[in-house]
Image 1 (tube, rainbow, N blue to C red):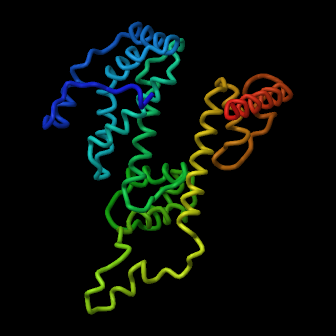
Image 2 (image 1 turned 90 degrees about the vertical axis):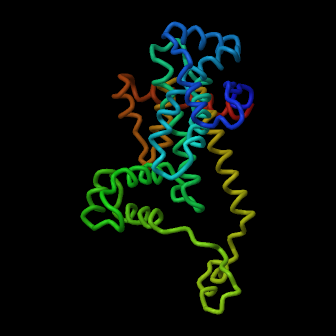
Image 3 (image 1 turned 45 degrees about the horizontal axis):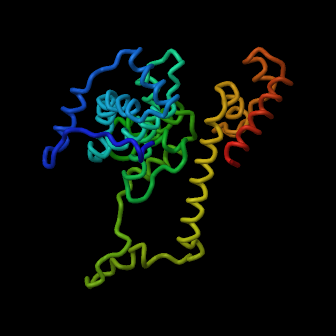
Length: 286
């Protein structure tokens, strides 16, 4: 959808971001019924014009959310662009039969795209590569009370607040506080600074960049396949699979606990889990 649904605005060359913001703020606000009708047209008839109108009417919310991330030193226009991608993903997945407004549903998708963009571009080297690290990154940026290195009591308080080890907080602070340095330095200087350049101090060549790139691509494909598989499940089945197999802390929720949560037997939970795994396998095998 992100490739087939251009957002056409009357913004000419040189008019810039301010003209764009004015254009999206002038867009009509849809009533709930209008929103449902457009969403139905898109989901049932693949009406791209209906989807475009849904996206266009919600661009003002993307800009508002993106402004909250300007403290990371990244261009607002780029933040909005990434948020727009999240909005289009939300429109694609929006269920018009549920009693919820699109903006409430889309907030998660908009923020997720902006989060990913910030982490990817805040430094030359990624400071956060896992979901848990990203959560810590944004909370650390938001909750730090002063510049410079944190005191031990501040680290302890943040670790307790975010439910992580103090070593994890310290490691992330080090990643965020350290500055980017050049891989190579100017070798025309007559001092010994070249010795400290990363290009001069590397000694282990076992981690081939091509292999690392391939592994990263494979991990991304696996994540995309997982997301596709989860999308075919109903809400209860998805929750059961995530609780049983995808918990961040690695602790597998028992069948008994899920049975109590949903008011059914443990055997029924096992059956739902088995059926859901088959559905997921079929989704990525076709």
